[in-house]
Image 1 (cartoon, rainbow, N blue to C red):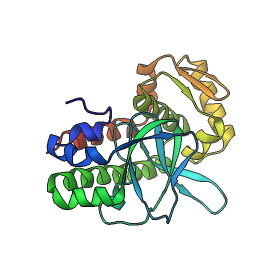
Image 2 (image 1 turned 120 degrees about the vertical axis):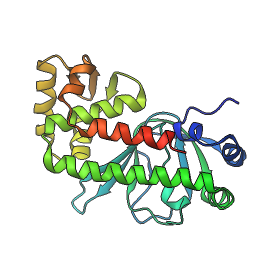
Image 3 (image 1 turned 45 degrees about the vertical axis):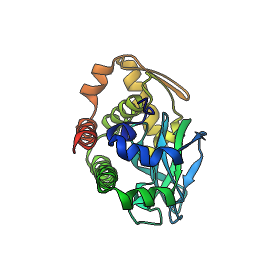
Image 4 (image 1 turned 90 degrees about the vertical axis):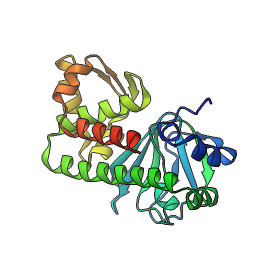
Length: 232
């Protein structure tokens, strides 16, 4: 069976995939599209085939702080499938690509008929919660440069490219810092040869060095992800 290039769909049983398959449809994930906002009723679940969707907390002054990142390794909208009708976060496309989408009614019907699918969705939901907790600790305790390295590496893993289109404003919002702080950190990483940086574009030159410079949160999230995809 040729499975879609989505880690979650590849991790479920063939039987569970066959329950979902007739209801999956291809959709575009255009840059900056808000899939759902805080407080919205989630009517679709998305399985990204590439790109990056960020789950962010929107503040009253217009700032956004990232709580989690989802790419072709996961699912966007799991709380609705697990009986949580409304979203706690804003889901926004940060790197454009495509996804498979399914109406929430079909997901709920599938979950009602499959304990194993419900377990997998619950594991993924726990992973997103763990990401949010890790992000909160990271923002409180780690230096901006360490956090920027972590974020660049995580994005690279999701899009599988060493060339990233990321604006200063976007990076500042995701890290919860000022743009000038991101600029200074990026310039230093360029000066030591880890990345090539110009406005809106980052190219990774030395991945190993970036991993050395990143905070422990990068490896922690990777380990959590690996467990989610392999646990039965």
